[in-house]
Length: 347
Image (tube, rainbow, N blue to C red):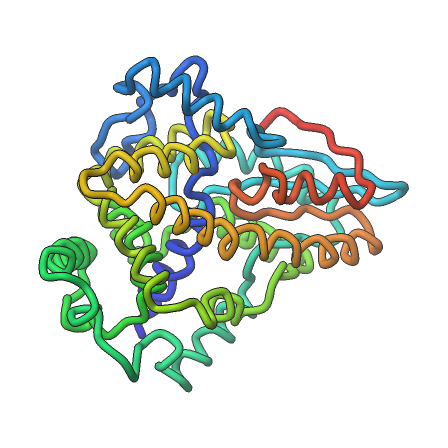
């Protein structure tokens, strides 16, 4: 598999985890200006009916710590700075890096979801066992989806530079992750441009800072291990429902992230999917609950002891997708539950 395809996998997975993270400051709306660096779209929040906006804000505010991307967690002598990241390239990351560089300089350990060692191990695993990504038994996606669904998927994958005949053989969860990445962002990934996570890793390497992964390189595969085919197909269907709005969605996501929202996008994604024609409301809600459990909750719980252990050796900066921060099972609430005091810092 080409390196840029792996980058796409990583960014798409993380993007899906962020998929809610960072939405425009809902009360005031987000400024669409700089967000259109690559994707030519409009901010969806600017065109939303007031009643829908109010419902969106209410759903966002119903969870703990719904906003904020930079936090300090302290417990005794332990000091941890938590940075919610956006995994795609954007010129506004430069200002964020300037803000967190002193924190990185003071850190004993820099933690990210996956570092250089994990990327190398992932590539080695895929080279050794393509079945991790390719479905070697059972129906292909062309066979599992209806003709209209397959046509939508084929068009979406062509827009991302991927031949449909090849995509048909991919495991459904992987395809759903690829769909989370707008076609208008593919070129920047192919050119090796990453998001804030990559910038943090690059800086830590130049400064000789130890980089520790929050999870093992095979987490992406274990996440979906045992998930029934129909649930994986449900993830594809949810993503396809939003495909006509991909460019607008990308602009809204970027604007929202830089406005400091950490939950609104998830609620917006759910709201948009539920309103798509022909959607089964109960099934959509079940699909979203499953995705939140698999992509966020389970991982968040596993990260807490890893972060705690690293903090015993000195100050830590932990940078990961912004949607991992909020919620009853978000990293912030989980840190609070194990005795940390949290302070939101200006980004």
